Length: 292
Image (tube, rainbow, N blue to C red; front, side, top):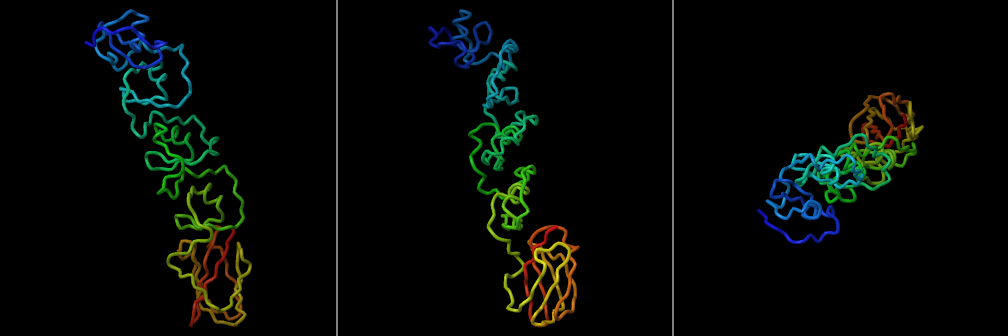
């Protein structure tokens, strides 16, 4: 038994949520609530008598929409203390986990908040904004959410925002995933890439060395076909086309000295490609922009 207590010093009976269990087994919001409203001065323990007490549920009380999560002794998480106590009668709280699925609310549209900065959740994942972290992922407290992307993050599908328009202009960037994207907007908002460098990626299995042999490609950019022209009359016998990841997309034995035309039907995506033209004595590498 806690025993008798002195006069209450709080201005309001509901100023502080600090439930107590009276000597007759009734839970009060705090000591002031017990003393000032009910004249109770003796208590069993400085906590609620039970985990849940339905007498605390007050439908007439309007809780604010402030997101300040608390986790109850019933194993559920609530948006704030008011919702836990006056809408569910939960009187004992516990430490929340990093993620509480109860907080996920698919009805909330977080797309309207995409002008906010990226945030890093306590789960080590980068989210588009605080709204998304809280209501789509269930990240509990603001202390678990740090401004800016997680340091190890590179690319995540949740960061892609398909509704944001991007131009078709070619200003290539090399993403942290070693994929070449047409421009920064497409990398960030269409593919969820967080980090990139200016310029096309250098394929890991293709040496970025270029022969002094002159070879013209037109049109470039191209969409349906290209024509190769060798003003020096070199005899090439093999053409290979690699994508920006270094994967072989097209290979054909050829035999041309002055010019030849190559179909681009096998190249189904826009982007940067690398042409390897091989003769009996050397290899020529050229960059090709394909627009589909």
